[in-house]
Image 1 (tube, rainbow, N blue to C red):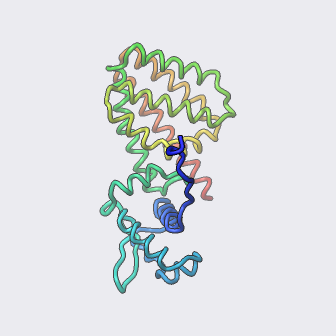
Image 2: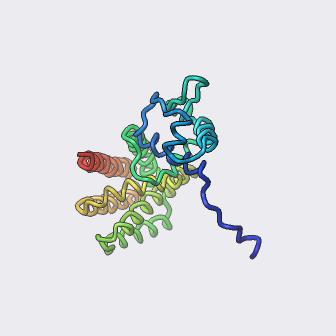
Image 3: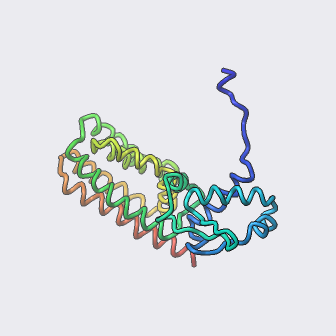
Length: 243
């Protein structure tokens, strides 16, 4: 027991610095190509030592987020060209709000690509056990408290995850689980508008029926409608918030 209880560790200033700049870049508050303040200026503004800033920038460069040019300065990188799996981990762990518009757009398009595929495959490969699990979620959605946003978000995620599991593809549910933090951030914003809940839950039941009847094309169509509706509604919601 004693060896399992390791001492609690607080974040170092370097870790806080890295997370702060990850958030600024992934939210697109800092633009690709933008020059950062000098290490001395960053240290003064943030109230930390230059060694903290330097070490943090080195790690950000390793993640593909910035480029340090000797005697010139540090610039925000085009992480599409320079990013690595380390940066992907940062993105899937992003839990500080909504990603910037370019990343958000890319994530929504990725969802359509992957989840229409999982819906079609689920209609082909689902098992009786999967149908029981779908029925349980649908029943919970019918009686769930509409004012309990965390419950609504959880039920929605479990439905989509089960669809990925029922597809029979071993990787799709792992991908969906990897993006759970940012996925639920988005749906939490989406379901804040209670009018969306009934639409989504009704579509879930339609999708369940299509999967139950092994109607693959219908399942793909319904999943596309679910995600497209969510995309357009979420974009409207976020544009209103910016005004």
